Length: 145
Image (tube, rainbow, N blue to C red; front, side, top):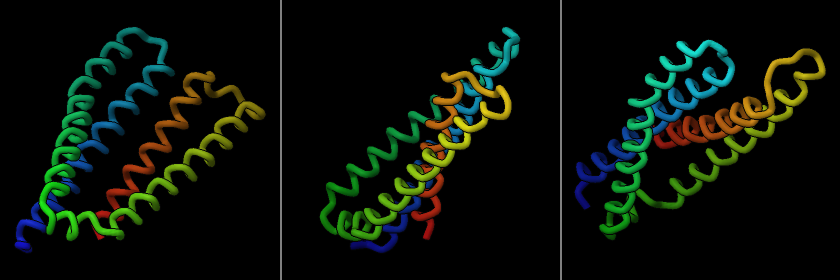
């Protein structure tokens, strides 16, 4: 198997994952801010800001899926880029995301004991946002190794 092709596919996988992570972070971050801001004009601006980032998020996901299918279709490439270490790092990043979800849920649901901060909808969105973003960032960090 050509080493340059393997490196190219690995760089593409990391780049597409980075696109999806940035798109997800900004799109859902703006969605959370929309839930907390009562002003309609600010909410409209945030909604317009979300459009290019949701496109970036889904483009990154589609290209990442296309790259994974291309890796799986070439036998030597699948062995070089889809080995046990990648699976291990994926499971490890899911573990970090699950841990971040649990910790953020405990913290967010303990806050009302001291002050009123979130509605239930905003709290749930924040917990999911933190968990998924932690998983994506951990996967980026592990794949860069």
